[in-house]
Length: 194
Image (cartoon, rainbow, N blue to C red; front, side, top):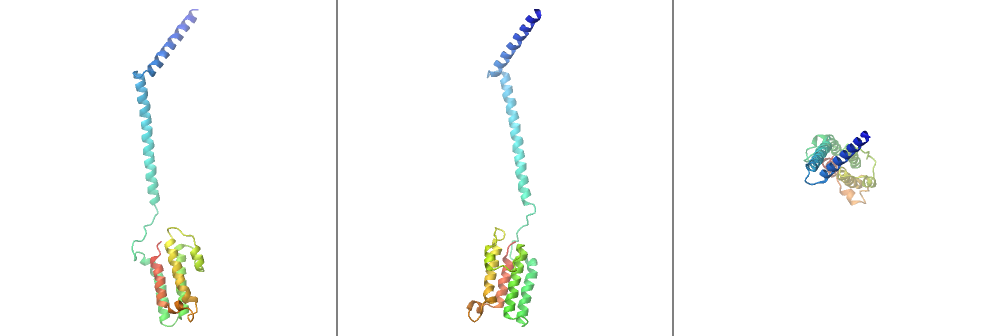
């Protein structure tokens, strides 16, 4: 019986202590509540700062990673002149052969169209040696190739009449010169931005 009384007293003491502790916690003036609120706020603040620092690191990494491997675009008309050299040499060779009589007018236009097609194939990475104007017009465009494909289409459209049309019936075909066609091809080579 003494044990039962002792257990009852211990249980009452524990319940009283629990009631006092819970009353102290819910009491706004209690030091326990103030410590609990500060401890919870500090943990929340530290977690928030950690997440913010992690977000900054992720954004910075993403920005830096997007710039890796990106080549700067040529800035001036002559910035890619070394890469244009072989194409310019091909056009100059066609013009030289036309003027010395080893190429006739039709062969010169055909050769110049081939240079334009070879250049467009080289720069775009897509074979364009047999593309018609409709094929060029329907080629998928994006901000990187739109300007070049439009120039290529204009060049081929300008070369078609002199290359294929009857010069007796077509004034545009009759009036176009081989030198002028050479300039069209060189303009394509100079202005196609990679």
